[in-house]
Image (cartoon, rainbow, N blue to C red; front, side):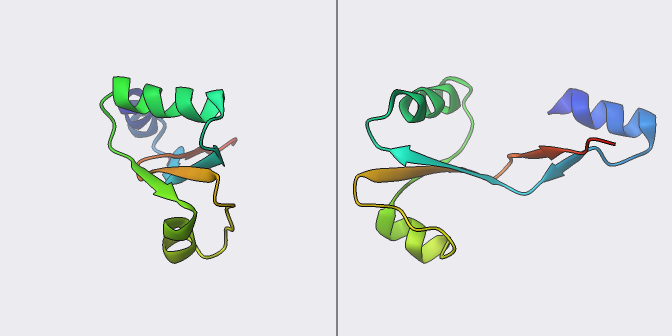
Amino acid sequence: YKLWFDLEKEAEEELFIRCGGLYFGDKNDRDVLATEQALIDSNLPYERLNAEQVKEKHPAFHLYPHEIALFQKDSGFLRAT
């Protein structure tokens, strides 16, 4: 994220909004597993949550027992303008 923060300083405008990211799907889905592996390979901290943990921590979401969620606290989005 360093380059985005450098660009924010140069532009004197907030561009990256850090709000955390929750990525979820079937625990055997290749995209979910690839995302988890990318987090591991990048040495980024994350939480692997089962359906019950998601219900406790993020009650707006409902996962089925065969699904998991990956929460990464530093995720966010970029402002388009």
